[in-house]
Length: 441
DNA sequence: TCGAGACCTCCCGG
DNA sequence: ACCGGGAGGTCTC
Image 1 (cartoon, chains in turn green, cyan, red):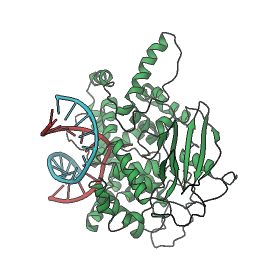
Image 2 (tube, protein in one colour):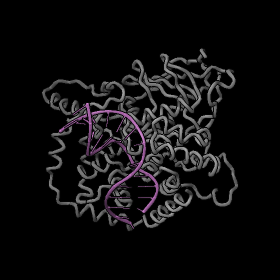
Image 3 (cartoon, helix red, strand yellow):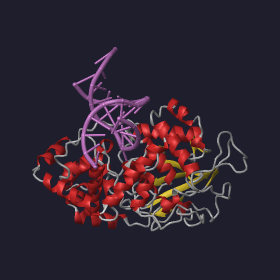
Image 4 (cartoon, protein in one colour):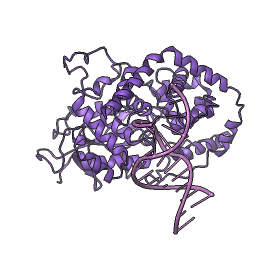
């Protein structure tokens, strides 16, 4: 299967402060981008997108599958959202790749303005962020985001990436190859809901997540109405191509009021393998809810270490109450795009980015010695998935811990306060969804 | 409500 | 060489 339709390189004016792909594409939002020979590649809506970046432009091109091939070997199911018109003339102006990229990178938000806002209201952000500029929240396909983050539970980034790659290679339609490496689109829920899928995924090394994926795929593809996931999107956030109100399914209660972050979060909790953290990842990176703050072990560490929140909390695992309290705390500090701010600090806290943090630090020292040099944009990718040994945090870690630890009461107070206010409903809904989930099985 | 354990696998450090 | 713990959690009791 040889021919691929490859477009010319085009470019979008964009500063590194607005978007740094070397950071954004590997900080654990999408697990599907691959860097080959200094260019990033990923299949988005039926085409391979290739990216490279310089100081003031994002360069891109699209590679379309060979037209009129007929049903290719393997499952040729429609991509997650909307099957694109394939095999068009690639040079044409009707190519929607630019608008796809604007949507995918959520370019309508001014990132530098947001950074300024967060830095002004949070000294810790102001201290950490300068080494991690250009980190945006991606506006991904909700189904892909959902499955990827079901895979993420109790797992590490490099294995998550491997799992997602296998999922695409075995179940997604083949789109094309780059430098001899095959690229597949992400498989839709229909193909993943077959009866043999769970066993197969287990065989592929998915572990207990195999069951969650198959079960969630079944629920989404056959129990929920078409477009159910897409309708959970933030209406204020431009949708990824798909028109959102095009589904006029006059169901009884499903055609209800527009969703809110809370209702979207709650709806996702019904799915198998989806707890509060995964639900927030999907809300933030797949549904456009900028206030969603996924609280994982890293964010929980950050809350305790840098914000003195939840000190003295004894349990090993986060209770639902504490989970919500952490998110509310950060929403109070950072505002309606708290999830975006969170990802900056989250990235700064990742072991694989420790080098970047330390480089920035020594750089600050060097700068004082009056040498100008502003690199720190793209640390070398360490042999694909190999987590580099980071002990760089050591010194700072201890100094931070040294700061006085008196305000555990404050954290508890805020937690209490936020939990009485508006979360009664949400939590009873959470319990209800738990019940439904267990009843279903 | 809350808190333990278990859960698949891989990988790293002692 | 072998082993315990952790990895961007969730489910069950």
